[in-house]
Image (tube, rainbow, N blue to C red):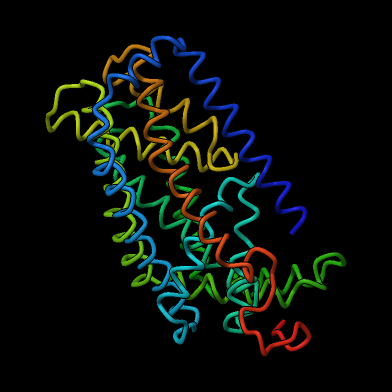
Length: 329
């Protein structure tokens, strides 16, 4: 946990640096002027778009839990674990999100490796969802096609391979013979069993459908940010806002940077300037606002949950009658 806290602090520090750099690149005075003129009355609607995203993604999370055999976890506790995972996204490489597998182990006795597959499935289904939302924009702006096709190809290959069970088990058996890997073979098998269940065709269709609707909500939030900065309303602007938000989410994810920090911001600002012809200061202000209303809003919610969930933050048992020695491993 001490190492996790250091990673989280590093992510938060990077987030501050990115915000500062973005403000400086857009000219501090001009960015400040745009923020002063922003229609702040739209803030509740922007946050509502983000909450819509979180709500549908929570339904997907709970659905995934059922797919790996966790069916007796109360909805409220499931929601608590889901929201508590938001700050973990800003740890370097998002490695902190593996802690969700530990939480599921302590709550339900699910093997950690199998619980971690839920995190993987969340990321893959979100990736496919935002790529689906980006598809029309990529057709309109072919320069984004190579990155789009590369990420889509990798995700689809991973999903398909997970369902070719004989080949996957054979590969795992071969890996199990290697000196350094054989001691982890049991965990690899648990991880694969979870992935096999989560990426079944029905599960994939449901999760990608929920993800597509969820991320469209944040695309609408991006559209509202643009309206608040004085961009004229219209269907084309809405479509571009959804495309910019979705494709930038892909860029941030493949960068492996904590929370996509830096990569996502540069992508949003650059695409807004390219597709809408916005000035650098306007694009910078829009990027700051949407990231505050999405990523950092989520991190704040997660930290609030941490304040009231010492069992999650300190890895203490949530059951006062359960000793550490009796916890499932």
